[in-house]
Length: 195
Image (cartoon, rainbow, N blue to C red; front, side, top):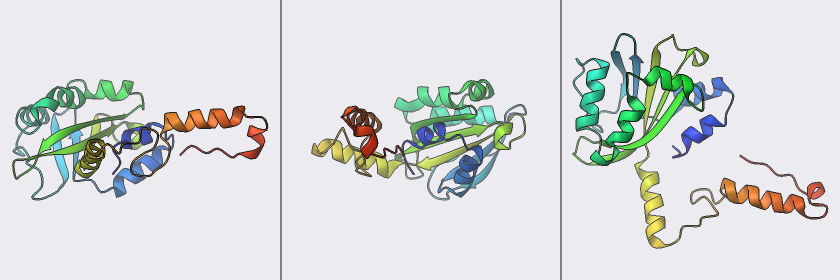
């Protein structure tokens, strides 16, 4: 699971491929929220991994309980902004990538520790959901965060290249491509592809 999954979605205009990816992805939790009725259903839960609130709560009560008790104190403000049930549908409609929101925060595990997670919130008729229905996918990104931290601490961070793939980062790539294209005959000898 990539830490930049939301960016990948925002650059992909094929709505069906986004839905297919999410349906086949290795997520830990998936919730379906009926925002107007203030209800939620847990569609998938990774047993033994994360703490979950009592299932008898309404969605807004679950949101408040989660923010106060299950999200790391340094991440609560971001979580509250991302998952606020009273503004969720409006923000999905106004999102840069219409119908998709994303955020990263530390969620409390059953052993009492906190694990880095990425939450993807998706909703809207263009994704096949009824009006007012959204899905929340929760991905464990702890290993990616650990890898980035260990690279940063070891001093081996290459600001030009992605540490996992070795490929040039977008800013570096486009600068190099621009330089290549500016060379005499540069446009006739190169095929430049951005992934």
